[in-house]
Image (cartoon, rainbow, N blue to C red; front, side, top):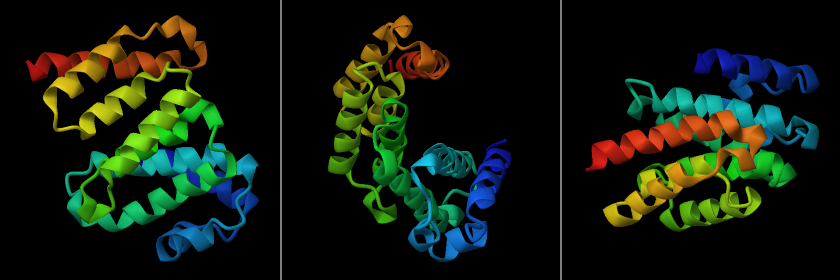
Amino acid sequence: MYQRARAYCLRGLQLRHPALTLAALRQDPSGALGAATKEDVPLLYWTGTSWGADIAVSPSQFARVGELAPVRALLERAKALDETWDHGAIYETLIVLDGLPALVGGNPSTARSDFDKAMELSGGQSVFARVAYAATLSNQAEKRRLLQQAIEVDLSKSPSRRLTNLIAQRYAKALLTGAR
């Protein structure tokens, strides 16, 4: 499903920018995205997010490490064009990328900055930001605190993100149950 989503999103980008192909993204990610505009931000975000999710569920994640560069480039371009898009959703996904080990481009302090920005742009209502950041932490007490906060977010305060927040809350509950 993630591969299908990525293909649909890439097709949408190609309709506006014919040179923006999967091959171009793999060869020169930043260069391929140079023509993208603010109107492309939703497609840039969903292309990068679906691609990253596909890598995350892959049985051969290590073999796909090279694909992280285009994923990051898509999200960084979206952020450069409209960092506030969808109340900080771009930063939420960047938490996951920046929370990876340094060997594959992660950086704990950048993940923390992404978290702070996602929380600011969401008005403190992002459940996913809390869950994503908690997953990067080794401090179990801090991780539990964030997961508990995620569960306590009032979903009615952000109706446009109700579904994603509900899913993230269920995941937070599952992680807390498994963490005990």
